[in-house]
Length: 322
Ligand code: HEC
Ligand code: HEC
Ligand code: HEC
Ligand code: HEC
Ligand code: HEC
Ligand code: HEC
Ligand code: HEC
Image (cartoon, rainbow, N blue to C red; front, side, top):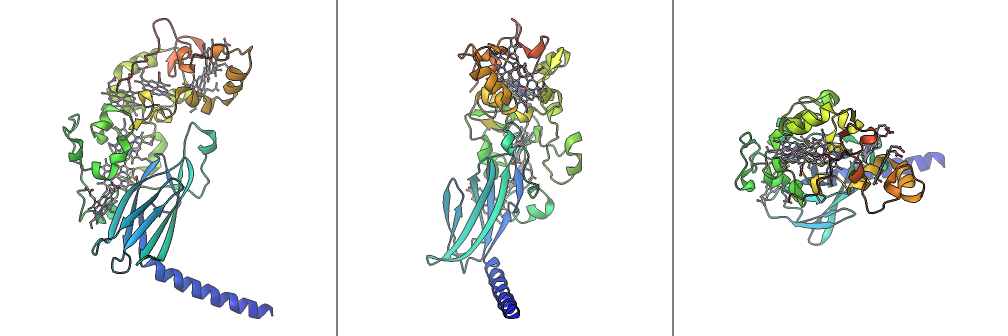
């Protein structure tokens, strides 16, 4: 009996693997790789299909469902999609005459330094890189894969940037950072690694150094002058990771902070949530004056006063630039 079961099982396994192979030929997800790790909540999906056997693709995530009609010769199909923080599963279904003929799944994880839950991605997720000669060769036929930016010279029409067609979504949010909205991507993505990502040197043409602060300070010189002299510096600033709090491209919040300011602070200072918001006799004045946000009293970067409390000449700049 046991042997028989085993036999049946093997036959089933063989059948199903043959089946899988047959399906894989119809659609192939070229990007992103399965179990890839990301920082942005947008991504490009690139699917290779056999056009004679597939006439429609459905790209399904927990946020949206996109349908792509396949032209007679369209082997390569590319779409921007949105992701959520944490685990995402993207299902690609291929159809012919309304009948599903194949299905592929890619898993990806969007990590965040300011939300504890998403700070440490499960180990099976790995950072992957797209911009290598081998990968770019797959797109070259239809896309110009070289950089056409001139250092410090903004594009008059950003659509002229060779990067725009694939990455247009990265600057879509209301508050855009000047070098990004002018498509001077090379200001930060110069291919150089920093001490924290030295192991990735050479894995992408457009690597950005980690920590990234030295790139930021090349333009933000006055900030550097002020903060490097301050008596107290906030740990995430001192370690150079401006991008923990700021999205260097664009964000729905002023100064491109990744979340409303209080949420950013409380993401790392969870205890303050209880102290500042729930206890009356809070040491921290936040709980007493609920009209104030954390950064009305604390400078998020540095200060000469303990706890980075603001001085009279260091008031919060509430001007919205865009
Ligand atoms: C057979 C030609 C062809 C190949 C090969 C090709 N693409 Fe495309 N791609 C297109 C066309 C056509 C568009 C639409 C362009 C437009 O809207 O101006 C496009 C658009 C895109 C978009 C934007 C999609 C959106 O939702 O706005 C992305 C991202 C993209 N391609 C990525 C890639 C990547 C990555 C590769 C290589 C792995 C690749 N493409 C290879 C033809 C191709
Ligand atoms: C044909 C489409 C295409 C073009 C053109 C393109 N990219 Fe990408 N890029 C991708 C894809 C696909 C990824 C993988 C991550 C994703 O889907 O967002 C990627 C990833 C990246 C990354 C993350 C690091 C890496 O290597 O994965 C950076 C940075 C980047 N692109 C910058 C640029 C810049 C700068 C340009 C213009 C010089 C550019 N890209 C042009 C498709 C493209
Ligand atoms: C001010 C510096 C800066 C500029 C300008 C900039 N980036 Fe980035 N970018 C970064 C940093 C730092 C990261 C590292 C991850 C993060 O914090 O989001 C990054 C990450 C990325 C990623 C990978 C996100 C992921 O999911 O892992 C892509 C793609 C990207 N940038 C594309 C671009 C493109 C395209 C441009 C030009 C429009 C651009 N960047 C301009 C600093 C910059
Ligand atoms: C190529 C030059 C350049 C680089 C590199 C650069 N920035 Fe900027 N940044 C600008 C310009 C120009 C502005 C708009 C002028 C202004 O408002 O001060 C700006 C504005 C800002 C603002 C909003 C300032 C305000 O008062 O509204 C923040 C925040 C910011 N940048 C953060 C960063 C971070 C973080 C980095 C590194 C990841 C960085 N910048 C790298 C040029 C740069
Ligand atoms: C702990 C989170 C955090 C880190 C790390 C951080 N910032 Fe900020 N930054 C903020 C917040 C919050 C604001 C103010 C937003 C507001 O007032 O609405 C801000 C405002 C700014 C401004 C505009 C106001 C000003 O003070 O000039 C600039 C420029 C800036 N940051 C650049 C940087 C650079 C460059 C780095 C890295 C060297 C960095 N930030 C690191 C949270 C941070
Ligand atoms: C990426 C994580 C992170 C974010 C986001 C963050 N902090 Fe911090 N903060 C730290 C670390 C790490 C320290 C140093 C260790 C400690 O004292 O807890 C620190 C220290 C502090 C201190 C000094 C505490 C002491 O006892 O000396 C204050 C005050 C503070 N942060 C306020 C803020 C405010 C206000 C914000 C929002 C603008 C913020 N933090 C956002 C990580 C963060
Ligand atoms: C009305 C001004 C004010 C606001 C708003 C405020 N704080 Fe404070 N905070 C202080 C002062 C003053 C101290 C110095 C210690 C004390 O006097 O108790 C402090 C101390 C701290 C400390 C270090 C001491 C400790 O208990 O760990 C942290 C961390 C901190 N605040 C974070 C925050 C966060 C996060 C927010 C937003 C939720 C916030 N603060 C809002 C005034 C404020």
